[in-house]
Length: 209
Image (cartoon, rainbow, N blue to C red; front, side, top):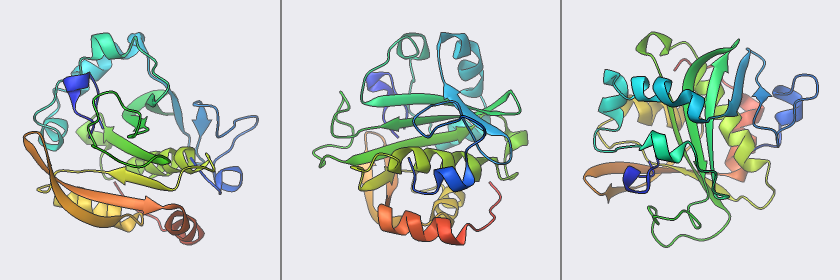
């Protein structure tokens, strides 16, 4: 999670085979998965929706100490960050943020090497949990990261107490690295390198999240 002190919250080799539709491109944020989930850029028209999702219990529990400062951040477009809305057949269901942690302004991840990405992801409504949407969103996000041939690894940092998230990321091929404190939060740091992502995509297990 990229902390909101900077007004924030915390790409693929199999894209053409698994996730394109018509003229969609992995370099285009408006990408579509086979089950109809589409990623588009977030903007100020999403302000009220994101503020509402912030009030949902499952999102508070997964990120209790941050202020995303949506009103300001949705109007910014720094080169090191993408903020994306996931839609299911046109209905918004979740949010994804992808950052370059070496270039991120607040240096949330500290002194890290180049050629990494870090992801934040959540489902907006509790009624959309455990339906496989999170899996498809995460696959789209990882494809988006590894589509850049320079990207070597992806990082993610769920709360240490969020055991359901740990199982979810591990089933997606991410590996636990360390337990680390970010501000008030104690988190598990997970990583996924390009080789492991290719191996995971070849298996393509069906998950529910």
